[in-house]
Image 1 (tube, rainbow, N blue to C red):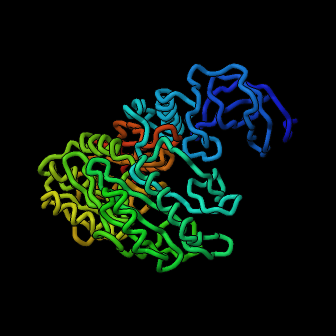
Image 2: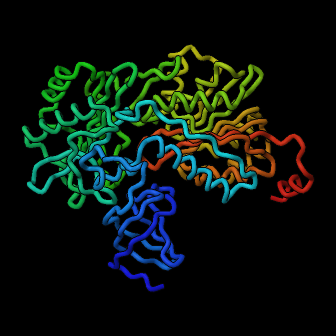
Image 3: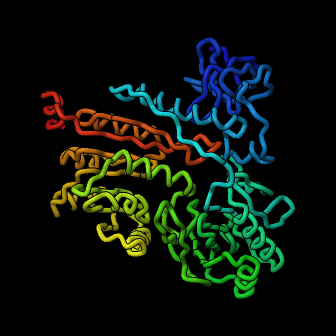
Length: 466
């Protein structure tokens, strides 16, 4: 292959990859070009060449796609947060559907048609949680914003089109206080300095706001003045929390929270239910789409009053409570103890009495429920982290053969991998992408599996051998 770094080429974009990047071929050799769209002719610079593929930089668009649009964000290219912002929204939904379909075609025996992506009516300002790193700019001044793509350089942002405007307003107010009072900012290299992050959580339907101040220490200079000024200027703030993070880590939040105003939580409404949200508990950052996702999962499951349901990776109990209305009993499992505390309180808050929640690793608790407590579910709901399900969890579920499995995933690659593991006993009935993060390459997927009524003898033998 004569392709070399720093050479320029004119290429046709034949497809888009899973991250939204354009794909071209030069003498059969694959080139990935961020920012290019299928159907375009572009001039590129080769920036990296590997044995199996190369990466190109988009220099000039010679023939633009009809789906290309003007980017409405000044920091779009450096931030990398909304990597599909140059593409019309409806087309991004089709791209996500196609990306999931490609994984299905490559991995599953049942090449079922992936349904259309469920999008948003208004795909702007949808995030209810903002995490602003605090850094120092080139002039030596404190700054907040987002990390530059693939770096820890903080890019100042004047206006973000996916964050709640109130989050930005509060974060900038805190930054002004940091500047005015000459409060130090954390330096990753020296591990000195106080302020690390400002995290804002907003109850989209209640309007309640939580302000989390992530610091490398225990105290904030003139803390009482900061609290007084925040509450006076932003009466929607219901609680302010100091989060202590003194570790040398990329993890934003530490494990210690100190309430300095309010009771340490806010509430929001999802569907017909009210939920308590704490600093460390997981709550979908796009509640408008989360409502659609959970309603889809409940609809797929077709739960009856005779059904026992397992909800693994249940978070603060959102989907458990959604399902409890239709089920005999719901068992929720989550590794974060604070989330389980919230889940139990959320059940009480909504007068839901047929749920039981367990704190612990899903793999271990699942084994205890099935093999020690002899609780056999009729329906299992999964919503695991990006790495997907542990092998033992899959085997435990396959061994008890629930009639239906609803698998919600934030990573289609691991979802399809896990579905393939289940195909000997289960039929994948439907796969529906849901756009939780508009203008990004991320996509949530909800899949339904049903136990096969007539399983071939070879499949049964294969399962017993495994």
